[in-house]
Length: 297
Image (cartoon, rainbow, N blue to C red; front, side, top):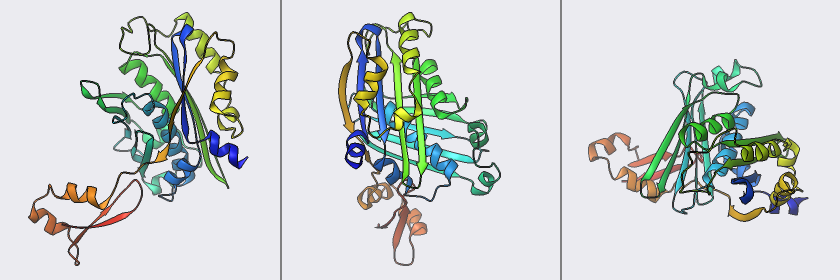
């Protein structure tokens, strides 16, 4: 079981169904997820929220073709329990962080809804280093019962791409595991062609979305079931399934003393003087990995 978990987790699988004009991604997170979560002592509702966000980040980020490109997901509100949720993906590196009000959270009970956590918030998905444009962003209201529903709305509203996402999260004494499946309908090819005919009631999309909708939570989390095996279970009646091994996933906080030294170099000496401690150092706290970097500038 330990060997199977190592093989079948912390990587992305890409697949296409050519006859149905559909593409998908499947992922299962284990060690990487627990490494990210361990940076802070998150209470269970926030841990579950961040686990969901990290699976979505891996699924959506893995759609990028350029290894230098980055996908960032932010959920934000001014009055909710969660004031900021931030995750990003770059070349298989994933990281995430949640800023929240512990006192407000304690008033919500053990299983708060998405609205209870965020109130009237919004979800922003940003792609950097993509194509000639270099950067583009889509923003949608943070509505629905889950982050997955908000991401589905993003693809439909911002990119006109019918999308289905299914997630599963488990947290017990052995740690947290999570799995996810993303399926999209892209008529006339995967990318770079007119998508004007993409619609939710397209017969090909109806067919594959019904099949994908049968995936069970236990299948997404089953450490003895490979991602290839999961895709085969769902779509084995199709004429062809093209499978592409995606990237391995790692906790990818890019903080370092050298990085912060470059950032601090943009400040004036007067501004830096206010930041320095009695030893003449600026101590930078990385929210993602919870490490403190003493920087001499």
